[in-house]
Amino acid sequence: MTTTLPIDQMIDPQRGIISREIFVSPELYREELEKLFTRAWLFVGHESLIPKPGDFFVSRMGEESVILCRDAQGAVHVFLNSCRHRGMKVCRYEQGNTSLFVCPYHSWSYTTDGKLQGVPLYRALYEGTLNREEWSLIEVPKLALYHGTVWASWDPQAPDFETYLGDAAEHLDHVVDCRDGRPGGAEVIGVHKWVFPSNWKFAAENFLGDSYHNPSHRSVDMIGMGPSGQRGASSRRDNEYAGGQRFWVGFPQGHGLTGALMPEQTEYVSTYHQHPIVDEYFRYCFHERKRRLGAKARNMSLVGNFFPNASYHGRQPRGICVWHPRSPTETEGWRFFMVDADAPAEVKDVLRRYYMRYSGPAGMTEQDDMENWLYATAASKGTIARRYPFNYQSSMGAYKTNDPIPGDVSLQMTDQTPRNYYRVYASYLNGAPWDELLGRPQMQVAAE
Amino acid sequence: MRPLAWYQLREEIEDFLYLEADLLDQRRFKEWLELLAEDLVYFMPMRRNVKFGQHAERENTKQGEGISWFDEDKWTLGKRVEQILTGVHYAEEPLSRVTHMVSNVRLLDVRPSVEDAQEITAGCRFLVYQNRVEYENFTFIGRRTDELRRVGTSWQIARREIILEQNVLLAKNLSIFF
Image 1 (tube, helix red, strand yellow):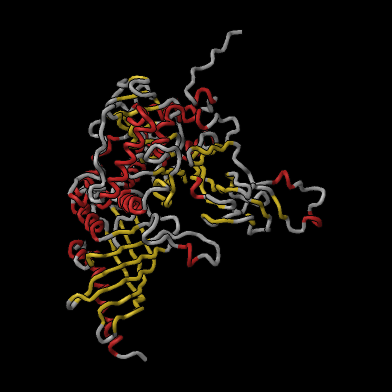
Image 2: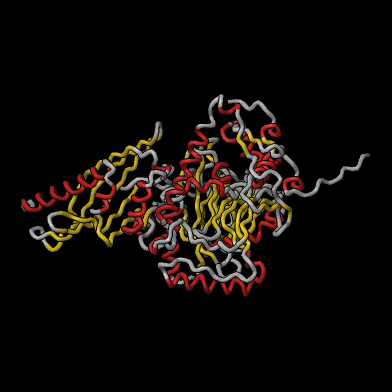
């Protein structure tokens, strides 16, 4: 396969046309790894995975293994999981506690703040040549702790994470803050990891406010496996947002999501009918959240994707799923499931059971997604197929900026969020400066 | 030497497990559900890479806490069957072709006695082959521990623990039963 067109001709948000090449081309995939995954802020993990000094959790950024680690002083780091000497992974356990990362190959060892400590036969072999200070584990230049979540970028010039998030921040808050509105306070109760033969962007795009794919989930809606299913409720979720104004919103940085803006006088909608304690907990959280956040509590964030590959469920179920690239046609999903750390035990138990039957490769809902992404990828590989681009023309122009919430907001289902996402994606592949990647007005270059 | 009754019992249990596997492979899902006790626990942990010496404590996720591949009851499995029977569960529509191989069947515990076996803990190995649509192939290999309960002249499964020998799941879906 060869890429025949420049990126700007393959991605045409104005006309709503996007080439299939970006979902199958090995050349474009290399470009993504080099120009996008080396710059964008990526989700790495959550502080609840590494509560104590010496705790580590091995994660991924793009194709590469990284170690999320809390050092002996309590500071959080993200290191490339590769020895500086010959590259062996210095950690092949998924999670644990250690005082040293010892490379199995030649036994170079590193402290939890990444410093090279042990070099066997140092005096005899390296004295006067090897300066340990210069051979620490490779550390991300940009790291952000945000309400318990951990994000990192390989680009020293990357803007602060909050600038990168922009107005999408309040939607991330919805996912990572306590249900009652206290900032942070979530706990990751498990991480699904699995591989599937699809381009990673199909998965990201699925969460980018693509409510249009609902028909593919008809089976779970018919059988009613949701939180009130045992009481006969159909559907896969409780409809908490029936009285709200649905919105689909994109942000200049490429993030996109869907949610509902609830009326000011909205009342709690009963959920988890078969579990009165859980219903009561969420009733309490609803009122407490309203009290704490005021008008902001009207936002109910359902699903979305933080550019480029951190997708989320904000309500039922709840968590962040990262779509790691493995090849043009293979993705590794890492789904981090979240609950309020201080929620009652029964609430956590009901939630985790619901998460498992909904999400991931064993989840009744998401299995059908994987089927779609796989065959969409497979059927886009062909020579003839690649001559025909995808259609992204729904709701062209049907959005308002910053009305009624920040961002480019549509009140109907729309391809505006993916059009916006791929516009930003093209900018990364064109090596655009950060101002452009953040959607800031271009600096006027004075004619000289 | 064990008493003859023990071997007879093992054969009875093997037959039961083979019958059960056959119901699944023949897609007789509703009949399969009838073999499951109302208080069924159906559990498949995730397997983690842990340091030597920590396997007993940390290798497998735990039933009753956190996230596993499956930690379910009969209601949920019933929903999974219902979902397949809708005909629009696209991860199993068209249906996969599946064969369950069950082997290494062992009686790990028989209660109260071999002569009057009411409850049995049986271990086995499984090799499950799934072929989907045209070119998709998945092989799931692992170990199972089943708690079986005598009901009349047959048995019911009261608890099933499925130990899949994988860390990162090397299949896009777990849309079949184990």
